[in-house]
Length: 384
Image (cartoon, rainbow, N blue to C red):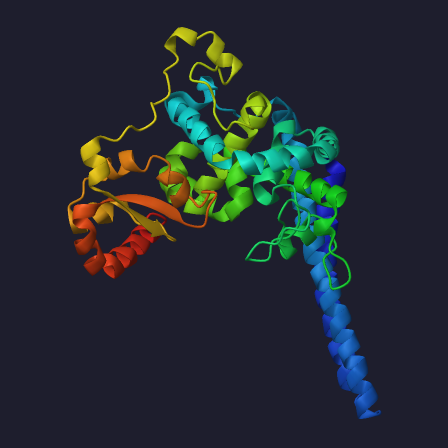
């Protein structure tokens, strides 16, 4: 611990010495301008580039030192912490039934992707498990790579995140990866997994809760800290509404994926979990209290006659639809039970077949643009 702090102080001293050396080079450049201007200009550029490179190195070393200190102080706590899985009522408390129902919906809509991942995992999970163990991390964190990239080391996100753990350039470099025009360690399974372990350790030292770590991994620690400050709570469910919708879905997808692979893997091919299945050992002692899942929606003949399908590429707010068209939002929720997956951007298809009353179609067509705009504003305001 003392060595880490000495290293941190040394890094800071290096920064100060760097600023004084910058002044030295300025004086040298000013003094030598009587020579060949072309050669001198090249020398000046080399000196400037060298100074910038050393300054960047100094900043990165300082950040690495802070991370190392944080990791050392929380190692024992990390070893004791376990990743929560569906059915773990002692952790989820009043949200336990919601989580169980979400896992059922997630498996039903993602079982084909999970089958593909299961095949890939046979060659990847042993290595990931080994790295996580060496870094005092729960093995369930390997499922983060599943929802990040479906275990594809060539995956590239629309915002430029790369590899199985979907590192952005800056974060990857900070975790020790080389990212340049010739080499990108983010696609290297072993190196990127070690970097992910380092980053997860750092985030846990900050958040002290694995669901908040998963949220921070997705959107960065700052939005999570803001949500904590706004609510005064470190409980994911209490800060959830103040996080980006994508991040909310990311955390729920992680819970579902980890729970399925850990305790329900044999149900992946069918995509269906039996009603009486005990998802977690904690539930075995409460078997008489287990609520049966909600029955699949059965529509009445009158409902089917008055039902049309809208093909949505972006989610609409039930609240806005109710406000603009006087359509009962509870009816829309019952007709579209998996709509929350679409809202949180974890629906398996690019568009959603939205069940909507036929007798409201003409009015919807007239107000479609306004409803879409107000819905977008509604979802944005959830984050303010």
